[in-house]
Image 1 (cartoon, rainbow, N blue to C red):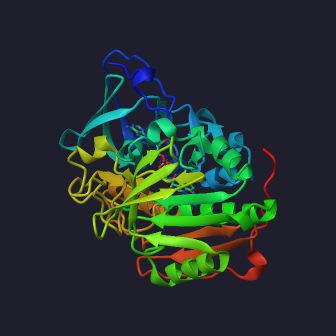
Image 2 (tube, rainbow, N blue to C red):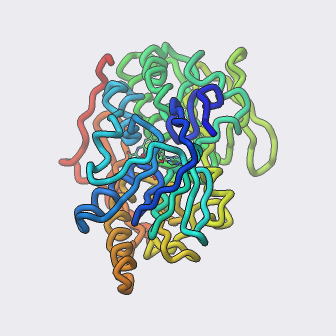
Length: 401
Ligand SMILES: Cc1cc2nc3c(=O)[nH]c(=O)nc-3n(C[C@H](O)[C@H](O)[C@H](O)COP(=O)(O)OP(=O)(O)OC[C@H]3O[C@@H](n4cnc5c(N)ncnc54)[C@H](O)[C@@H]3O)c2cc1C
């Protein structure tokens, strides 16, 4: 069975947009540890596992030949980096001791310690790590998939529309610049606001700010889930003259009339905002193949213990990153702290020792609030926050890329 290019969406769903699965004959393989997803989480875990335990038989199932460093996408969308700077060949990042299975997982059978792939393989394992990221649901906004990347509609949430994003911001000559964030779980939950702040600063530098209105909408009821944080981001919006409308979810784009249609989540009423530039972060959710499996929790996420990262029902399955049920931010920064804990606990399980690693929900990550300013957030399950000292402020500048 193959996955044909024509059925692959233009902007993808979170997996690679331009992947064509090889047409394998059905076959069976076994690895001691199988990792699903060779993105941020899968790659860190594979490297750490092999460093801690040389000779371990690790298989990584990852369809894409191009690794997307999504952390850089806001920098590309705001003209700081060229798009090519956010991509690397996957083959250069997969540890050479690991076995790369270039395929797409289709279903899980954790009771039988097996999974199947779109390419027709049955892969069995002693231990499984599930890290396929989050799914982008472009089709939940009517007209978006066809319109994004042209006519003033852009998004830093897909590689294919990064260039159009910077072009739209750079060429904005005034009018209404609208930035949207969906309700629910998203990767980089402050990304849409960061994009808004960066663009707003660029408009001031380019001279278009005086005759423009900058609007940020969010389906959430606050700017961020941690109140101290939210207050700072709210204050910054006021200082920058950004109009904020919370509780609004984008449901339709009408490129011909330059109208964005929202649902007011509290009243159910439709709200229409006319735009000249529209930056969209699409609705996101768990990957379908995870949500439809027995590995999922009620919300569709890989159901792991928040401290050990071990699956709640299948002891030889672990999960981390955006696909997981971990109640922390979905960021690479969080993954950097999850990975060592997962590796410690997986190796303990492999040797039948008690699991001693305990994840505290930690992530230290930077929220870009302008070309020369960031907030550094230090978060854990208790919602701690630390502001960055002035000496550590980022110095970025838009290049003509
Ligand atoms: C615009 C933007 C800006 C961001 N900025 C920051 C930032 O400043 N700081 C920060 O810490 N984080 C940031 N992030 C978030 C960060 O990139 C993600 O949290 C991180 O990439 C998640 O890692 P992951 O491994 O869980 O998923 P991903 O990195 O998305 O990797 C998932 C992998 O699984 C593969 N996959 C999918 N489905 C299957 C399948 N069926 N079978 C096999 N493989 C599959 C995909 O091809 C992909 O390679 C940003 C994200 C975006 C989009």
